[in-house]
Image 1: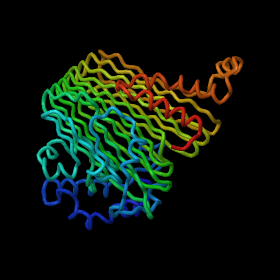
Image 2: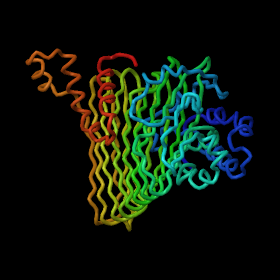
Image 3: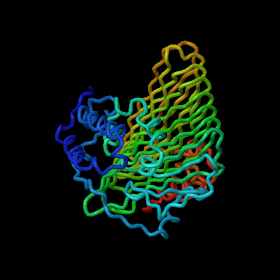
Image 4: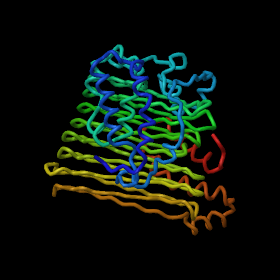
Length: 444
């Protein structure tokens, strides 16, 4: 059991409504799902909120979260369909599910053009219509063992999205998931549970866009599980653009099969406190993954990117690059771990994190780590942190470029390497626009 330093009453407070809400949760009549929720509640009860003595949470304090009073009831939320186009990043998406405060809105969603063998639905719908799929894929390795916030999600999971591709199914256009937080009189709390199951030789691109439409706080505790079957390709792009006072804690657990590929990109610009934790298991020879990310924080925002890549089989490879820009008193965390097991020979794994500090008070904590138990490997890691290049800034100013524009150009050039790595047509321009908007200081 991990050491807990946050007060026990905080954990009890977050579990208090469980007995009352459990009978009304989707699939409550299913013994296995009810038991899984009980296991999640028990795991969180035993471990509680991780404190600073838990190594993976050493640089991220959840004290502000535990001191907030959240509304456990389903907040009434209305959203005008005319607002959606202004919020969408993946404009080429052929189908879209919209979640409002963690609940599927069928009126705002548009699911069309999916080929035979492809199914996209809400988690609550899947609990009713496809329980066998959930039973086989939910609760992946370590979700309950050492991820306490994911265990809390498991206890209260009510909705989210489920994408299932049969063997050989190829989605030619992206699927978009738009998750909107609207706030309320009391800050709402919700636990979306997402699942992507890609059969052998299938291909899919999923764009998740998390956005807030309120000024106040709310708490989105998200868990996404991805199963990439043999020779499949799963491209997963996440844009975290929550409201400035929001809390966003997300865990993504991925199982990559033989000769399959995960291509992940995370872009974080919103939230008061955010954490994106990605755990990838390269489970069979030929499995590979690419994790790229970019984050921009200002004010007192805090952003944590934590990744674990487990080379559990020989002849697997991984490439990881995260870049961040921090201004004012913002803080960032990058914890990246590559694990190579004893029998996993002929491994190629590389990791890099770079941070750009625009203020003397901005702070980055970087912890790259290699755990190698095999000898036939090519692995590397690195981390850098620095300020804008004074000579480059002077050069641009001497050519008549205004200082604000010169700084923006240098920041965009710094982030380009990470953004260039995203293999999704139509996403580059919106991301570049988001960077420019952030540099201008304009609110979304």
